[in-house]
Amino acid sequence: MKVLVVDDDVVSRMVLMHLIDSCGSFDILEAEDGEDAWQQIAAGLRPAICFCDLRMPRLSGMDLLQRVKAHGALDNMPFVMVTSATDSATIDQAAGLGVNGYLVKPFKGDEVQTYMAPFSTAPEALDEAPQASMQRLGISGERLLVYLGGFQAQATAAGADIAALLAGGDHDAARQRLERLHAGCLTLGLNGAATQLGGFAQGSPIDGARVQQALADTVAAVMRQEEAARRLHAPA
Image 1 (cartoon, rainbow, N blue to C red):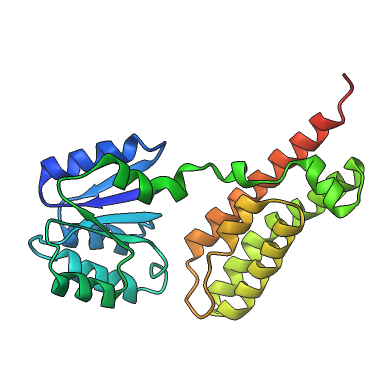
Image 2: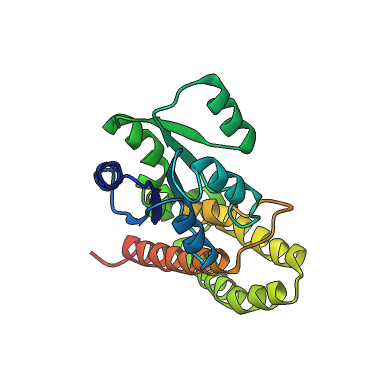
């Protein structure tokens, strides 16, 4: 899980990175100002969340926010403005651009933890236990394994198929494939993977790298669920 911290003040940047690191296991990346952050994003960086200082040289936090929210592959990324300014004009301007939250200096650990909480739970922790899936669907363990095996094949094949659709510019067809996989995850109790697959908003361009990561995580989730189902019925 990538987290981007943008601040031209190295001390503030290090303090915030330390507080984020204390919230869980994250790949924390840093940028020395908005221009540095934008260059990394333009090169393909897709952080799960961005913490960005307001006042910086070259490209301000407000200008970076505007660029991010205008970028189809990034408009759903949570963007938290880091600032010591609490005047209503600044807050209103950021709100109008789509900011997702504010973090006021000096930092407080509990406030950082609030923003990181949605990312601190491993996706597999959201998954339904195999036995619960069996009871909900009214099927045996053997049947659940058959369903999981078939779904794994679908998710694996979807990588190349969706990549081809996106290369051809057919985002609607790609989104339909993702929606079917999302429904399959919900049916099989793979709620963590369903959350990822459900993150491709209607009407927004689909980022191919995000899709491939979500599909890889889905296949991994299926394999974990298969192993859990086998353990459930293994001889004592």
